[in-house]
Image 1: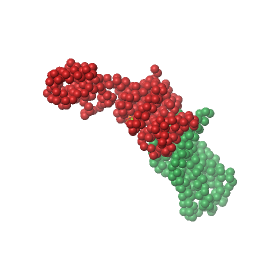
Image 2: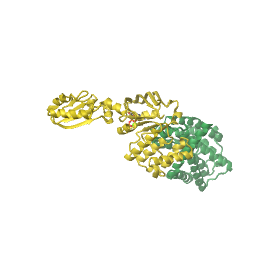
Image 3: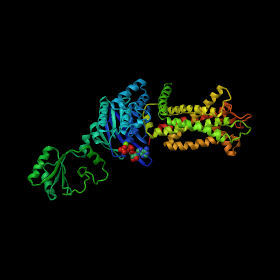
Image 4: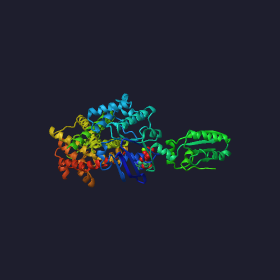
Length: 331
Length: 268
Ligand SMILES: Nc1ncnc2c1ncn2[C@@H]1O[C@H](COP(=O)(O)OP(=O)(O)OP(=O)(O)O)[C@@H](O)[C@H]1O
Ligand SMILES: [Mg+2]
């Protein structure tokens, strides 16, 4: 499969700030790549480089083999973009906004209008079609902006936080629109703060931090990277931690970690509920009362926090221990 | 050829978008109309009764060409403000990701501002007629005079485009432009004959493009006092040629400059 998007060692500085510090990324045609990262990581800057809005200081970025600098005009014909902040014209109606975009994609008047009508319906804006955008709510503007990105049915779509500020219904509608487009063969690069969204929409996820891609893979691969399944137990008595640790050795699949302060034990396992039941039975037989127990698979939230964690205090210690950075590990 | 027609087509689409805004926010247009009317009245009745032209003649007639020039130049501020606003609201970002010609947004902007200026000139002419201004030449010369005014304003729009794209804040663009435009349009022959000015100011006034245009328009409308002899400097002796020259030079410098700047413009 050929790559629709390719980014090689792209560096972008704004004065003293290095926004992109050697980004590498490739997105196979027809797939969805999710860019995940904390605020200021460089997601928007990456999107802006790929959509020809910013020239990289060094490195190379291409979309379908077209260079973002040299072949910008040809590249623009094949992409659709919705930036982090809605770029819609306040003084035009919703319909006029989409018609304008269609005309500028050179669809011709009739097709531009037909497409505008279609998209307004798809994004639930048909009632607002003839209203001037100035009076629109944030979510309505956002939807209109997204519709603008889809006008020309682009081969490659860039959406920067497409569902931020949308109500749940609009978010689901957005997801459906995106899925439809991808099903028809388009490639999508999307940034998001919602891990659920990345989990649901993206084939692969790249975690960006400090202007670099620090991890990349499918949601499952990333979860495995942070740690597989585990049992988390909280004991009634702190003085039994050591006993519990020995008892659980039989079901553990990796190193057990213990947090004395919270009377907590985290046990990596490989056999899921089977390990859970056996572990509990063993503890019961050893006379160790347990007040709380969960079988957990890491979520993308865990992945996100573990990979981008900068300071170690007051975040979920279970995850931190698995990422090998836990504090207060006692035996 | 196809790239040119494409550029014009895109430019027309953007012009239409800007004209819709004039329609939707008529306050802007109304204020744009009120100020030239106010100018005409102010100068006609406040200054007009105090200023005596050397060699006699009707000051109101003399003054109209100056007000025309000043007002159309002042109106071009909206080119810079409009672009700065589009940039601030992120619409330029949207346009820059679309496969449109590099000059389309600027062509559209300057063209719709020309439409705006046409309305302004029409209003001002009516106001002038009311206070007693008359064109004393032929229809052809009068039309040439109006065309020259609008062409000059169109060229100045491209200077404002560069300012708007560079400064990015609509308020700052507005204030900065006013300072420059007032300096340019007052140190000129717009409201008083340039001969009376002290040394360096006089040289500046006589070579000021605003003076050449004002002189040309005054000539074409037949609004100079009887027995008037233009100052002995080339641009004022040949004001039409000088005006055309200025228009060409401004366009040659500022069109490429603003297109180049547009290509690097981003909302932040
Ligand atoms: N035009 C600019 N001038 C100066 N600094 C900038 C500019 N654009 C981005 N930056 C800086 O570059 C870094 C990356 O910014 P970017 O907008 O790409 O982050 P992001 O990952 O999209 O963040 P968020 O999740 O908040 O949207 C930040 O430190 C930001 O301050
Ligand atoms: Mg961002």
